[in-house]
Length: 283
Image 1 (spheres, rainbow, N blue to C red):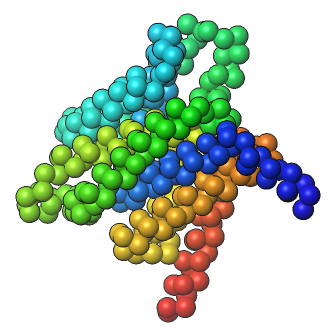
Image 2 (image 1 turned 120 degrees about the vertical axis):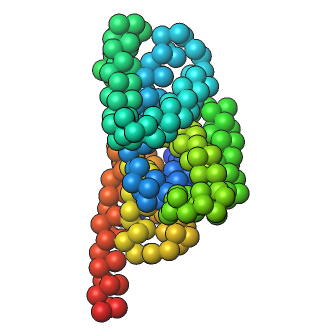
Image 3 (image 1 turned 60 degrees about the horizontal axis):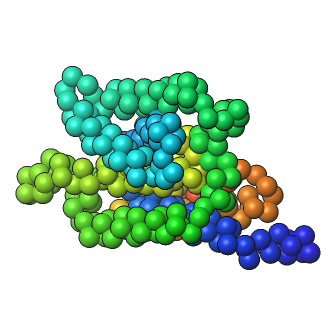
């Protein structure tokens, strides 16, 4: 108990509180759109855009920007729009376009970091960017504020366009027939995901971002069946796992991003078991 109390004393430090705030906000935002992406079978858009963000961070570092978020956000949003447009091209299917952008951005980013290396510890810099490391524990108050503003904007947009997003998710052709501008709402989804990707890079790193999108949605689907209940459960699941992951990371000294994903995996296993038990009782 004394050991645990000593570790929980870390909560008095601002950097830990900042990490918890940002972690909760990012987990909430990523889970909301995660359900839509999983149902539209476009789960790995997060993975592809995270690699784009990695390349954008390399470019911003080379150009010596003191604040790389605007540059990374702009490039990632543009890539999300291009990915959406290219994926609708009959000559280049969505999965092929995603693979092209993902692999190309990752390769170019790493190449640029090698050519214009600013640090002797290049492997450490790359590892931090890819897996998050402890970067979330070095956030400034300004970065937390920007994250809060963008996260709130994402939640508001999702709530305002919930019905339209629901329609586009389940039957895009029917949505078009009823007068819904499916292309515009697909564009909104792509832009929101791009924003979430950029925010999440400090939390789990570019290689683990897809976990924040996929695991909460898939876990909720093990137990619930309606879109609304799955979305709510996914949000609660994601927030709890993010909180647990950050707290465990602070207490044990493990990498933040990997610890959060490990919590997601354990929770997914529990939800899968719970779903089987519930189906067994119904039969």
